[in-house]
Image 1 (cartoon, rainbow, N blue to C red):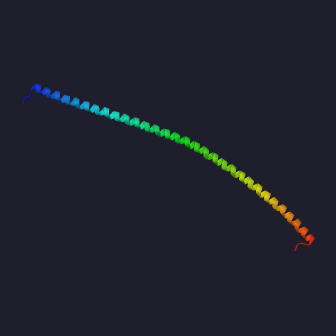
Image 2 (tube, rainbow, N blue to C red; image 1 turned 180 degrees about the vertical axis):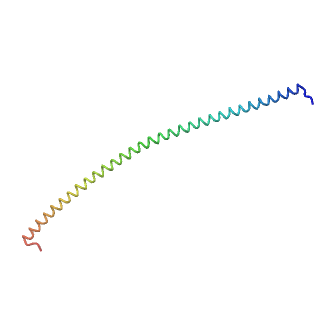
Image 3 (tube, rainbow, N blue to C red; image 1 turned 60 degrees about the vertical axis):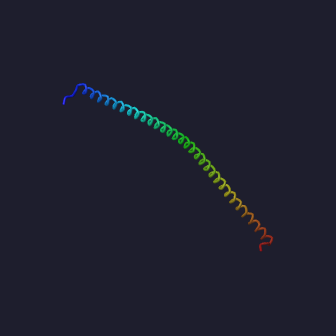
Length: 119
């Protein structure tokens, strides 16, 4: 079977055109994939930026909350120390009052005995 050089050239030309079309389609798909990747990269960066902002905000809140808790703890400690002082003073005052009442009671008993009222 003899092939006509023109037919052969047409087949080669068709094959080359098909390869060129396939390469163009492949390049278009690659460009589309690159656009999708870039879009995904940007979305990922935006999500990462939002997460970083949230973390920074949470850190600021936790620092503020920690200071508030420390202030509250210091206040409670001061109140406890004040109460301890008040209780100690009250106990001392009560003990002193009991001693004075005991002296008074002994004097009343002595007066009652002297007056003969100790019945």
